[in-house]
Length: 362
Image (tube, rainbow, N blue to C red; front, top):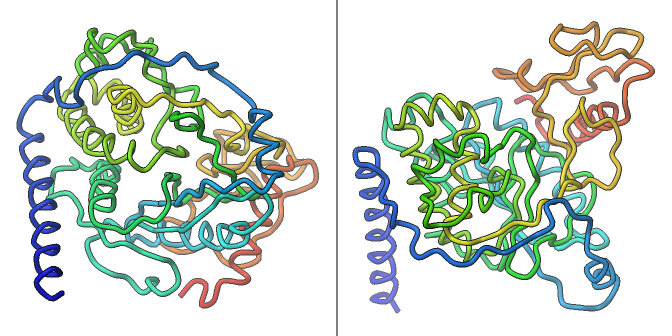
């Protein structure tokens, strides 16, 4: 048994060393167009769909659940940490709710070392990219962290939900993926057709039309674990190659790594159901509707009459960036009358989480 453990450890160590070597090489060499392997015929999918009827029926039956593992990458910054604590609080609240297919949860911490929240949040320690490789764009650590996690962790579920710290789950989430397709939220600002000339450097014509690249990022996405194991190394290499390419870097800016995932998914012929009810984004989305996640990436600014003052700091505001070096206090003031349901719900959910998470702000 001891020899077996030593052999397994050597295999894992060699695998991680090989991956590390590959990313170092990829930072100094052009992307190999043949990296993802042979292309396959594309799958035609209705771009925006509701939950299929058969899935709704299935969730009301005794059919075996298709559990997915929720994974959130994060740094050890105060900013990322308080968001992760709130996110995990609401994950636990809904994990075993009606229609839920939410399995386990992992915070993939890419600081390379443990922090004091290891006992509060299930955590995997990933190594960051070598110093300077992210060129100040810390998000490049995300695909590299996923590569390490998928290589080394014992993931029981057959599907993965890639989420982010600034996601709040607002009701139990079923497995929205289907028939080998991932399920992903469509972003209006991911426009493959608009940037076809740039994307062809990474998605050559022999891989198919540019429309094979879905208008998605890597989150929120539910995808088969085996598919993600194929996509992740390509996602890492495409991200690094895009960041190294001045034209791509300028074109994609802060969403570069999102484009890299969309390209990598297409290179491996993993299509996606574009599921617009996956999440809402206040203040632009005003009602909860049938959404599953609140993504609070945008600042919410209102005057005392409840009117949006976006682009101008409001008399009332909630913006996650206000708490980049300190966690938000408990019992944040609620919005004034007239502010949309989505914003009110967001603040109430933040307040509930902070009121119940032990040692909040410590």
